[in-house]
Image (tube, rainbow, N blue to C red):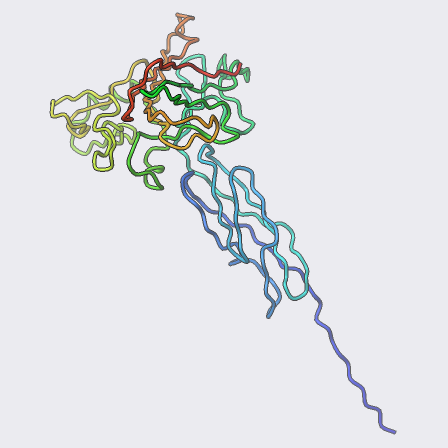
Length: 333
């Protein structure tokens, strides 16, 4: 008697396995990243991304690539979560993470005295849309006396039409953007102007005493000080204040020029309303605002040691002449 039989061995079905990734981008850029390159799935099978999430931006995705658009008011670490599904067996992976370091120069603290206050290049200060508070007094106490501050401006043109810029929290859109009024806006513009220049008087004094020495290199905020705009794209020729040591009307720190700042420490930034006003829905003014924040380190003088100063220079870059113009602030205590 002859027996014939066969044994079938079914391969065990396994879900994909994700491996975490690390990336770096700027707050103005879009990051496109193939997260599947170091992940595992069964040989001969195909996978696709089925879910994603992040905290400080927006995401699109296809089968393998995540496109991440960070909030330009955020700097630091955002962790993008995702899961993969095996198209052939239907199994889904555990969460994988793309950890992104977002470089953002638009956030800076003034902290020379008893106040530590956070400023943003686009003009909404002390709060950046997350859980961090930014007006601490006394410094180091975790007590915050102000929640947010933003500039409101409005005026009537020659036709008595109202023009208005009035942000509150930027949660329903924005009225302002970082940088000077320009004919051209875009990625290069954002990377250049979405920042704050922070300097201490000691740093400027060191530059004044050493600029002429062989091998000396100015620190980055002095070297990149935005004294001049790009006139070829409609920006104003003269922007940030500086001391023109050789009187050639050109900011050249390698020849001794240096930023002009008040106080012991200062922040400088520029923003404008030359855009659609998504929050107020007002007609744009075409104004450019030069912001200078400064403070004094005076432990023996309680008034100065518990004060910071904010100076706004508001410039009309539009073709309109405004009357009944008002400027104020929206301040949330």
